[in-house]
Length: 274
Image 1 (tube, rainbow, N blue to C red):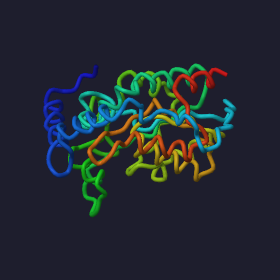
Image 2 (cartoon, rainbow, N blue to C red):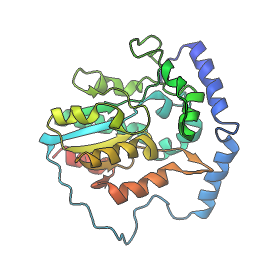
Image 3 (cartoon, helix red, strand yellow):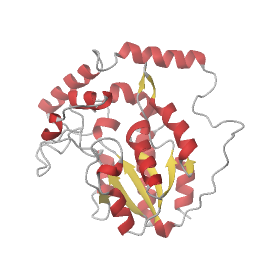
């Protein structure tokens, strides 16, 4: 699906194996055990909408003239089988049809003339000199996730894990899509997304991308704090499943608690078409 240079591909395969073993990550057996437990426990879908919700329903109504589609981290390391996280995130991506759903949102937003913004995640060599890190930061730096050779060069970027998914490039590289400065942790408080949206007269956001309980949820929280009305597209995201917890389940609960709306891709497309 994307042509990685052979040496890069070999290095990334080693990195992925490193990510799936040892104390810093989880082994494939652990992932399988988690999935098996869920399956055996579960005639019921843990992600299904509650039959009798206690929270009030959404009353968000789109005004397309002031709405943007925002996609977090639509990058190879999260969404492609060659990405360094695929061993822990691939099952969730495939379960929710995430890759295809994100493309559907891009396509529909472009056809509807909406503002579209991408908030990418990049690490430069200087970022590997941080003196302290959280658990996921340690892992991401260890496996070379989203690595670029520097902020002023794109050498080695094409086809790397930091690059955009190939099928999204025709939407992202059309000269109209806002590609923000990179966020370094999880949320957009470290990049210029809010500035870009405000300068384009946007106060409603349709939010999708990767990964659900990390960058996507953090963007939702920051945008809400900045006064945006935010709808999260629940099947245009995904998250890691680990013995430590199912990231998607954690995120979907918080989306329901905090977002102004939680839609499926089908619902979002219908609303974007007006």
